[in-house]
Amino acid sequence: MTVLGFGAVITMFTAIIVVCIFELSQIQHGVAEVENIVVPYELLADEMAFDVVQVQQFLTDVSATHDRDGFVDAEKFATTFKDGVKQIKSHYANNPDKLKGASINSAALG
Image (cartoon, rainbow, N blue to C red; front, side, top):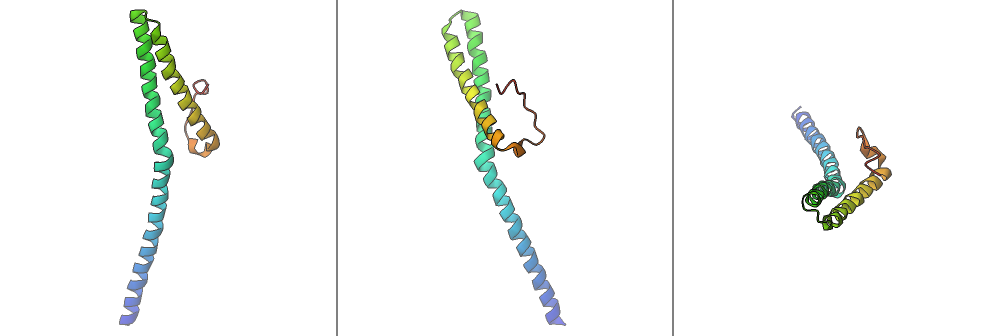
C-alpha cells in the first residue's frame, strides 16, 4: 500500500515537471518572438514619432524665421518616417495575422 502511495506521488510530480517544461518552452518561444520581432518594430515606431516631432519643429522654424533651409531638414525626417512606414507595411503585408484587431489608415501608409 505504501509503495502505491509513493508511486502516485512520484507520478504526480513527474506529470507536473513535464507540464512545467512544456510551459517554459512556450514562454521561451514567446520571448524570442518579442525580442526578434516586436522590439525592433517598437523602436522603429519610437524613431518615427521622433521624426514627426522633428518635421513639425523644422516647419515651425521655417514659419518663424523664413529660413527655407528648414524645409530640407524637415524633408530628411519626413523621408525617414516614410521609410519606417514602408518597413512596417512590408512586415505586416507578409504577416497579416499579426494585425488582429488593428486598424491602419491606408492614406497614412501612402
